Length: 354
Image 1 (tube, rainbow, N blue to C red):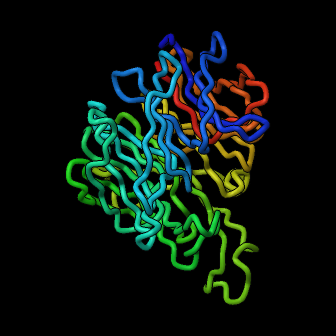
Image 2: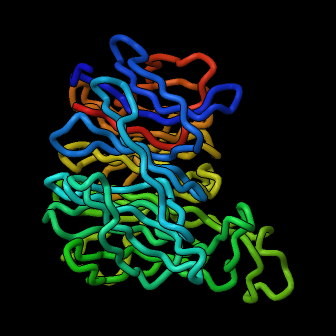
């Protein structure tokens, strides 16, 4: 596999067969592997040709793929009573894999499972997060601290997609010491029905988060159905652990029409290498937004139907996004169609290997 611009994506075909895929922008599909569980986000192990594809909720399998050979070399399962959320991150040296998990058999505790990649991904430890619904996490530039989006939503495999705690949910951004599991700081979401789900970290340590607004019964609205209340507030936020505003999340600036265009759902958050730009996607709104990180201002918006996956491609000085129609686009000053995989629906995330 060439290292020039391979993309790693998960998806499914028109027969709902789940797949793991490698793509190269110049050549097209490099490999397509059939798997039993729906996979959410791919992840590259540092300094190797190994990629991790984590099953999304309530999936219990993680696939280890040799991207040079285009083959599954291993898979490992969640321990009994746990399931994965579709995301993970590695330590700097690629030895430790940190995986958000739902301990649904233990009251729905949110934990981070710690796996030793050198020992065949043996599960060696877990960190209790003191909340429920951890989703995406990322390693901070210090190489030690984990930024964790604690979604706050309790679920159970026996109840399908039902959200079990909307009247009491509490989402937050957590900073966790990856060596000890100690929670260094916790910053609550600014609205109790905002679920912080996806994030990315810039080179200077700014965490950018995308939220999803959850509906349910809110006693503050008396007997009115909360689903009838339209949230028009921010869906994208930033935070710096050592910044002057470290006690709260900073909202990105946009008018209510921009936020409503997201349809209460941010799927992916991608940053460029300099940390000056961030791109967010909304499959429900069918929009891609390009933001200035420092100013928190929207620079451009593009319409892309069912858009979700996103990452930054330095070779082309632009972002690449994917959608549920199997399409790939380059996003810079303009929106450029790149390719389409026939009979394919890409899932919510992608990663570029450069």
